[in-house]
Structure formats: structure tokens, C-alpha cells
Image 1: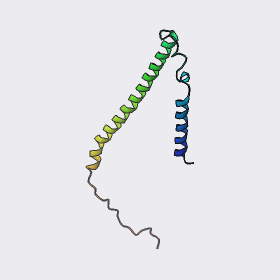
Image 2: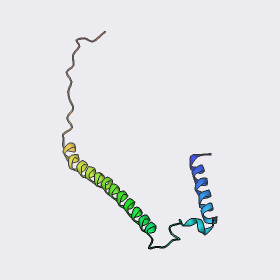
Image 3: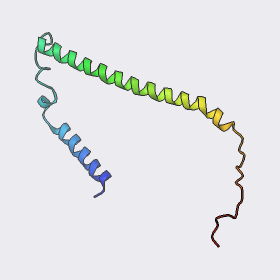
Image 4: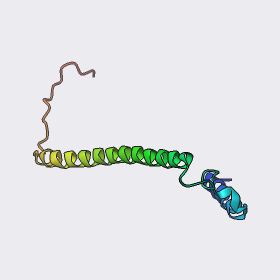
Length: 98
């Protein structure tokens, strides 16, 4: 079986199991509790903290890509403006085996 077919079958099986599973397994124990409890508030804070960290890292990666694209565009005209002159090599017969 090819990798793509194996992956497709695996995803289909997981989705089928998720659809056919009881609804009680779709939520965590914290979601069934009091929304004002300290455990729920801590979980919410943890989720927002992780989202903030991931957002910061992705913003840094995007900024680096934008910086590299701008830098490449700035130096590209200078390289293409150079004249294409062939380098002439002197022709010598010294040291050539016959």
C-alpha cells in the first residue's frame, strides 16, 4: 500500500471513530465542572499562554521571511546590472603533455 493510501485510510478510520463515539468523550472533565472554579480558570490561562507563545514564534518566522525577501530584492538589481563580459584566458602550450 502506498503511503498516501495508508494515510487516507488512517484518517478515515479516526474520523469514523470520532463520529461514532459517545458524546461524553468529546469534552474533558474540566468542561463539565464549574466555569468559575480555579481549575477551569487555570486551564483557560494555560491555553491562552500557549496561544500567545505560538503566535509570537509564528510572527517571528513571518518577520524573518519578510526580511529575507526584502533583502533579496534590494541586492538583486545590483547583481543583474553587471555586464556579462567573458573572461579571456591566456592560451599557453607550456606544460601540456603531447
